[in-house]
Length: 385
Image (cartoon, rainbow, N blue to C red):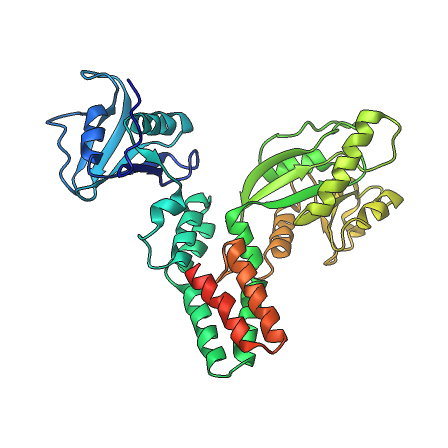
């Protein structure tokens, strides 16, 4: 097929996150949309006409009489717009988009597609963020913002500032800033680092939290020499777990680099699990790790090796056994409480993007300096872009 020049009136956009779901949705708009799709669409029955709001099933094929191709569902949502639903894998999506682009369509980003389609810039931002969510919990938070939770809270703060009320909007803005970690957790996984001296069971703990064997667990110090990462979902949140090399002094060059990498990971994590061998206890090496992070979760692993009466439970430590899996649920609970100290409630206003969070910080600074007029400006920008 010969590629044609882009038709400025024909645009395509992938509306779903590639590889995140079983089904992907590709949108195409323009006067030639039906004509272009008809070039590739082979319906399972009847003509390839695409009546508005009628679902048609068939295959996508470059061969005029092709009987083998990608199974798709096509629906015209208006005279100039269509949606193509196909397998959610990257290969299928890119093949179809490639054919559309070769036919003259311009591929655009999600935020470009939403311009002029949403009630506000804020809503457009959140709709883009919605496509990247990976759990029903995070999707629900973004949907609340699309439905107006953040816009309503922001507009209320603006009106209060305009009326001379400072205390209430100041507290409301601070509340929103306090929830910014929720917004970050919606956009990207929380990074949780598992740290500790060698041979305390860090890799085994990673495997238990994941529910499968990601890391090699072996009763020999230095088994893990690089950072191993894997993602999982805990309590409705996506968590990236990172298993690090045992932090200790070593003369071996490769192992030493792994230790330095572990130190960097600890300092940049959203939460750190400092793992202790319960049969040995807290050591000088743990003191060195504790200097890198202010408030780690202390995990006393290998609890199956000690007398249960010796387990002095406190808020500062969680006892676990990767052999019996005892305490793993307690550890997950402690971890979620650390990452999400303020669990969201239905309809709660939450800033989702860094831009929204920056606007709130700017408004708070202006209020603190007594400049109410300047505080209103970033709040209006939050709403309008």
